Length: 83
Image (cartoon, rainbow, N blue to C red; front, side, top):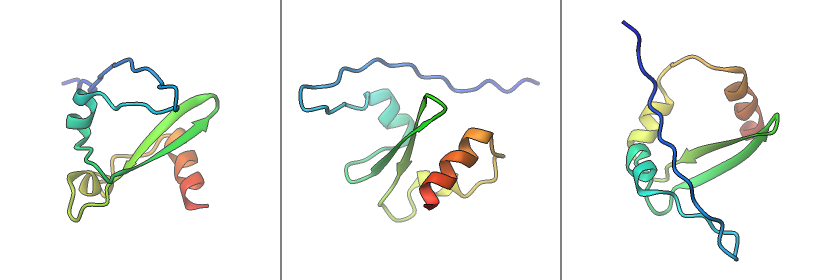
């Protein structure tokens, strides 16, 4: 059985103050709440975004502890975060 990847594509606009609104579908899917932090990284001209929850026992924290394998890009991002 082939496992399908979740794909959500949404387009947003940068405000004159360089702010971006995270679309509701993405906020709900990733359980993003006010106070969560976002890491922005450019790896080989590709934008990577990682969400850090400040809430205790948040689902995002639990997912981050699962061993789902790593890609070269995730290794690069982890190295950037650890610095």
